[in-house]
Each structure stands twice: as structure tokens, then as C-alpha cells.
Length: 113
Length: 112
Image (cartoon, rainbow over all chains, first blue to last red; front, side):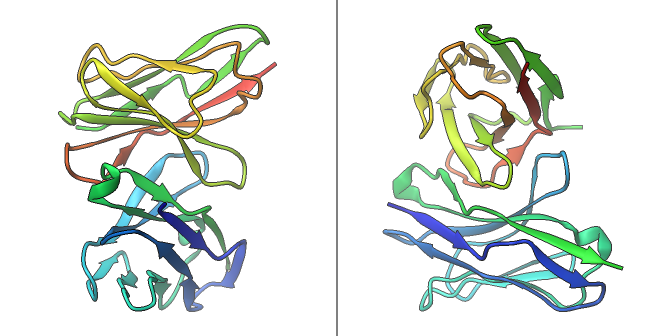
């Protein structure tokens, strides 16, 4: 079956540091890949997505590139802010799995001033 | 504004009681989903519905029930058979054939 593995948190960074959150996946076919963000006490918001190999999703300074050869979709940001503190979820979906989302376990990011 | 509304935001349940969590969407989405989130963990799928009057069990459906009588509404009932119901519950919806899901703000259920 499909699965998503994320690096365990929490990840603690100082403001303006470089961020990488690793995400790798296992899928039987050709999935679409997503990053969602969850701020404290709220639901999930779509941060970015990529639907085919070598696509780069980007939003709010965050980027992730769909790497089929390494089955990865790592999230990066060049300079984090305190307001980026949240939990980040990597997810995938496949047509042959009814397009259902499969989520990773989430990675908590804490950014200190 | 279009979106998904979950209510209530906080809910307290006595042991042995059934409670119903509301989820309404005005995005005209065909598919709706319920997820459970426990502290420090990812999301687990409880039930989903791809069309009105039809729904399927997810990975952890035991102790829960749903209905889908209207396209806009997908209420979740947490029954007394659910032995550990304290969690954060998230409702989501998506267009048919599209995986991109939109989430509500969640309901935090606590057993007292």
C-alpha cells in the first residue's frame, strides 16, 4: 500500500535559518504529492503541491520538488520566520487508490526569535 | 465565502453518551471525509463519502457512524462503542476526481 514517511520533530530553528523537512513516499503508481500546514488549534491548509516528476511546488517562500528517482518531496525554505511555527504534513494521493490522501506523521517546526 | 464549517469547536462528552459532530461545506464538493488526529500524530481516516447517500469506512471506523443525506453535510456520530474518543476531529472535502482537499477548523472532543 501507499505510505509517507517524514522526519520526526520537533525541528527547532532560529529566525532566518534555512529549513528542510524530509519526506519520502512509497506508492504503487504515479502519485500527486502535497504539503499541508497546521497552525495551533486549526485545521490543515494546503501549502503546495506537485503532480508529476521534477515539478516544483512553491508558496509563501516554501518549495518542494517531486523527485521520482529518490521517491522524495522535501520541503525547504530559505529563511524561516516565527510565524512559520506550525506542524507540516506531507501527503500523497493516487488515482488507483480512489484519490484518497495518505498522510505522513507530521513534523512540528518551532522558530525562535 | 466558500469553505467548510465544523461545529462545535469544543465538545465534552460523558462516558456512555453518543455525540454528533457537524460538518457543512458550501464549495459544491462531491467528496467529504472525516479524520481523527491524536496529539503528536498524523491523520487517520474514519469515513469518507464520494457521493450523496453513499459512504465507506476508512481505517478506524469502529465506534463511529456517518450519514450523507445532503451534498453539503456529512455529520459524524461518535458512539459509546468508541472506547477512546478524546481527539481532534477534522472534516475535509474535495472535488470529485481531485485529491486536493480543503479542511475545516476542527472539533476537539473530550470525554469527561
